[in-house]
Structures are given as structure tokens and as C-alpha cells.
Image 1 (cartoon, rainbow, N blue to C red):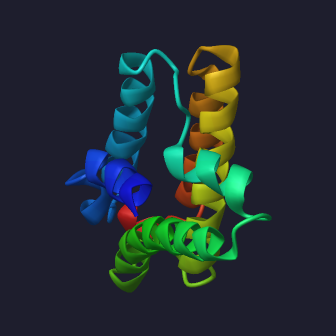
Image 2: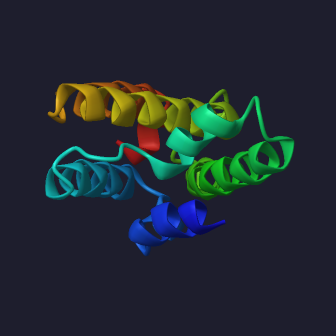
Length: 141
């Protein structure tokens, strides 16, 4: 789907390397900067289409859900790599953290679009990244 390619393509190569707190922070900063460059217009094309079509067009909903899952999987891959290297404590759940980060990102993009400023996006991304950081192992600090 074009929206998925557009959104995920704009985040490469960062999206394929979200395997450290530094990389997550760099990705967060790039997303914030992209919203500024776009003058806070458009929010997330995947999320926008999903909210419009999910209940009316089952085929479109399936494609949009797959696009969001592709995004979540990229985040999950990085968090799992951190977990496997022992950078996150054993009780960290990379799958749940990835879902939380993508969910927060979607809402942050929507509020940034509505408010025409990035503080909602920055606040929610910082909160979720702080949650992820709270799972860092003693060895990785």
C-alpha cells in the first residue's frame, strides 16, 4: 500500500536499526523534525486512512493493519535485539513495548497535527522511551 511505503520509507534507514536507546532517540528526533518540515500537516497517512476506512472497507482495513504491523515489527526487532544482548532486563517485554511505542506515536502524530506543534508528539515519545529505558539492565547503563 502506498501509505505504508511512504511512511516507512521516510523513516529508513533509522527504522531498520532501532536496537539501542541512542537509535530510538535518533528516530524520535527524526519523526519530530519531519513533522516540523511538513508544517504539522497530514499526521500519519496510515493512521489517517485507518480511521477513515477501517469500519467501511474490510480489504483496506486488512492492508492498513498489515502496514501498521510492519511498522510495529521493525520496532519490535530492535527491542528484541536489545533484550537478547542483555541491554534490557529479563522482565522487559519487547513485543508489548513495541506496541506501546507505536500506539503512542500514532496519538502523538494526531495531536501534533491538531495543535500544529510537536510538544504532544515529543511528550508521548519521551514518556514511552523513558519506560523502555527503565528496563535497562545494570550492565548497559
